[in-house]
Image (cartoon, rainbow over all chains, first blue to last red; front, side):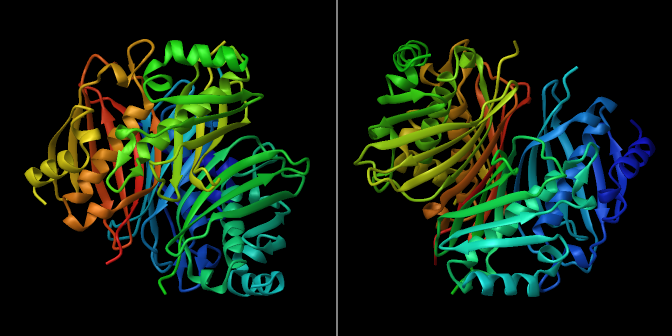
Length: 136
Length: 136
Length: 136
Length: 136
C-alpha cells in the first residue's frame, strides 16, 4: 500500500485513532512508518507530561502502519505482545514524533521496533511489538 | 490510602482517565485493585472489538491504583516498563474487568501483574509492569 | 504426555539442560509444570547469588514442560518472546523451585506464566513467555 | 573502564560466563559492546540450533559490558527486566555475534538494546534490558 492509501485506510477504519487523536502520518514505506501527535488535554498527566498510554497507543499505531506498508494483507494482523520501556518524561507542549520499523516480517509473526521522540530527537520510549499475521 | 481516598484522588488528578474513559474503581486495598470500563466508541476497533491501547491504558490505571493502596508516596511513582500479552479479542458490547496486584513492593522498584477479563472471567490480556518509586 | 514420558523425552533430547544442569521435574500435568534446580558453580555470580541467565533458562524449561503436558505436538513449539522481571537476589546455597502454567493454549500461539521461588516460596523472578506452536 | 580492563574484570569475576562459555569480547566503549560466542555442545538444541537461553545469556553479558564501558560504578548494577524476541533459528555451526548499546544511561535505571546476529548479519534475537544502577 502507498502512503496515501494507508492514510485513507487508517482514517476510514480507525477514526478513533487517526482523526480523534490528531495523528498525522508522514511516512509509510518499505516496512517503516513515521507519524506525529500533537498532545491535547486527554493525553496529559499532572505537570504537563504526556501520558504513558498515549505513547503506547502511538507505538501500536505506527507499528500497524509500518506493517501495512509491506502489503495489504497486514490489515487483519493483530498485536500479540507489546513491550515498552519509558525513558524520559515528555512535555505535552510539543508534538511527539513516533517511528516504527518492521525488523522481522514473517508469514506468521512479524516483529517491529518503535521509538517515540521529542522535537530534539531524544528517545522517550522504546517499544518492541509482535504482530500475528492473518492466515492465508 | 483507602478506596474512597483513591477514587477521589484519581478523579481529581486524572480526570482524562477516570472520568472521561468511564472507569469505575471497585476495589483498592493491600496492593490489589479492581476496576471496570464500559467500552465506548473510542475504545472500539472494526468488528466491535476493544482496542489494544484501551487494555494497556486499563492495566496501567489498575497498576497505579494497586500501588496507591499501599501508601500515598506512590502518587509520584512512574511506569518504567510495561509488557502486555494479548490473548483473545474482547467484545466492546460488555464491560471489561481489570485487576492488578503488586507482587513486589519495593523501595526503588515495584513489580505489578494485571489481567483484563471479559464478564465470563476469560483473560483477555496479561500485563507485567515495573514502576519506579519516588526517591524519599 | 505423562510426567514419566515428559521426563524421559526431556532427558533424551535436551541432556544439556535436564541432565547437565541438574534439573528435577516433579510435576507436569494439565498445562502446569514444576521443577527444581540445585545451583552449581556455573549458576553462580559473585556473592553466591544465582545468575539471571540461570533463572531465564529455568523459566524456559518449565514453560516447555508445561506445554508438553498438554500434548506431544508441542515438541516442535519454539519460544518467540520471553519477558522476565527479576525481583530478588537468590542464594545459590538452596534449590530453586520453578513453576510454569499455560494460561492460553493456542493453535498458533500459547502464552505461559512462570515463577522462580526460593525455598520459602518468595518469588525471585516472574516470566511471561509466548511459544509459537508447530503448523499442523 | 577500557576494553582491556573490562575483559580482565569479566574473566576474573565471571569465569562461568567469559571463560567457560567461550565468549570473546571484541569491543566495549562509550556504552557499546560487541562479543562473540562459538557454540559448543551445551549451547545446542536438537537439529543443531543454538538454544534460546544461550542467546539470553549473551544479551545479558553484552548489556553488562556495555554498561561497564560507561564507568566502573556499573559493576554492582543488576538486571531488573529483560525482554527478548526470537526471530530466526541460529545454526550452532557458526559463531554468534552479540552487540549491545546503552540507549538510556540513568542514575537509577539504564536501558539497553541488544541484538544477536549470525555471520551474515541477520538478526536472530532482539533484546531490551533494564538495569538498576547501584545507589551512590
